[in-house]
Length: 426
Image 1 (cartoon, rainbow, N blue to C red):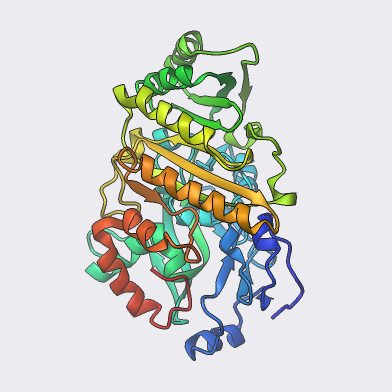
Image 2: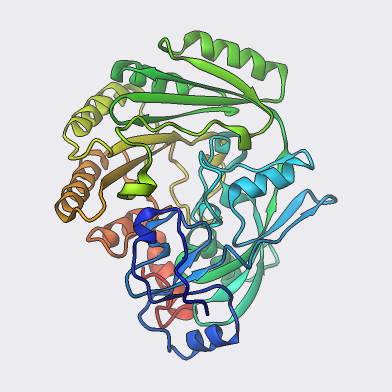
């Protein structure tokens, strides 16, 4: 046990007056878990530290970043074994030395929680979700029992299939994951682009993107203005031709730029179009991710509704964004993981931000987030639990929206493998 205060990238988590920090899973901690002697519950897990729920007032945090940093690449299988303290930037940088790639998200500084909650990448339309690449998972159940689980096949029993499905997308509720083994892909060059656009141009670009090949995708951020981003992986001559066609057709402004990179780890950092982009220093925030199908002809209507919501946000540092799915993410059935929204083509997310210590501002922004969700949920009925909010009033609603009909079985598994509620609640 280490009671020295840790530094979390998320300022809201970092400002919490926590009970203390564990940096290893030793016999002492395991016995506390097995004997239900950890108080208060739940134990909060930090793999990357970017979530607001890696720390909370008076709670204990298990910080895996120091002692769980091992990476092993298997050149014969093109698989990589990573421990739970490895962030996505380090993962992709390491495997790029072997000319391999992995579909990380827009930020390379998320931790293993990015994978364990699904993992939506700009490359997901071609390669699937990050969670689809997992071949083996090791860790400790919430009851303290150690386990290693391999991806099930036709010879596996029903309970192993259910446990695997639960861990792939809902692991934070059931287990402390210490390492995972992942498939990788051949590394290909990427063309990326960005531009500022108007609301009408955003709707047009969205409709276009829904017709793009699976090797490409778009994402956008809307704060004080709209920034649109896109990329295409270059593997065949057709990919180069598609890039030229896309760049010729998409709406763009004078700040348009495109650039070529050797792998996704080299994507430029997103510049969020808000008043102050340094959220981790003076601001607290929460993020709510939604999921829904193609917008198609509804794109203009949806964008007009989003424009009203943006105009009514209580803080200039709050914003709405979206990332494209589809393609290979739709080719897995709902029994393969706890990411049950395989029909989704878009993940919009709502970010509410307020000044540190501003209780009224916090309440206003959380209300705006909830109202925005209510306005958009007809178009985006699912939830992506990349961030959890057991401390907020909408937690039960987001759990239901995230897991749908799979939730009762997930609760049964939790009652078996985390019966004392050591980990966050369902």
